Image 1 (cartoon, rainbow, N blue to C red):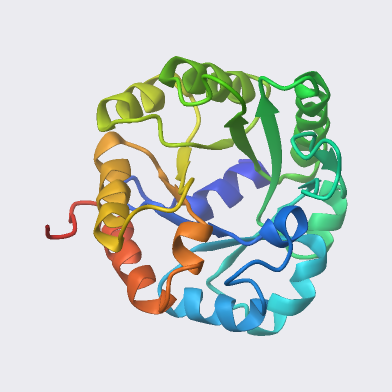
Image 2 (tube, rainbow, N blue to C red):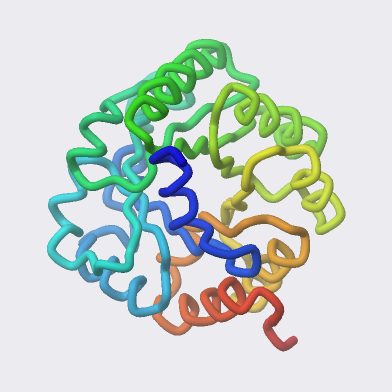
Length: 255
């Protein structure tokens, strides 16, 4: 059994337990937005709420390392761009898998934006990280997004997810494809675990909880939700409800 397989078993220890992951890398692309003013208190609250995996940039590890619990898995995000630049959809690599492993990473992540001029370069970056990660026994998560007109088409989302899986990604994060039926189709056509992101802010907590329950019923292996969770106050009660759905795997929030 390879190192990547061992780490994947930590991420997905049983078929009926879904992964509760939270990306906290937004401060590079968007700045110190609401909710990310201080990382350590947020990480503490999320862990108390039951989060399994925190995904941060390599520099942010220094902020969360002192409060990281032994049971909490660590992801290092290796892609970056900022909203200050002329081409924010062009993600570039800003670290290596070797650096991530030295920081304690259980998984590395990269972002690929489809339907933009730089799509090819980002696919090449994904291939490079996959090769590095395999040699070091670390799984690769690809944050897979479509941009521009038609970005919400379910068939385009399926295409993008299958593409990154076939290029070596071990886990795929993507946007909600519009319905539970389409989620089920997405899972069926993607040969690696699928995580669903939060996207634009949901109208209320119940709407968001219903979306999380859909991911469980559809066969997705978990969620990777950031702003839709950490920009809601207080974070702890909602995180606990997420964990109850994801870790129970058969329970849904009451409506």
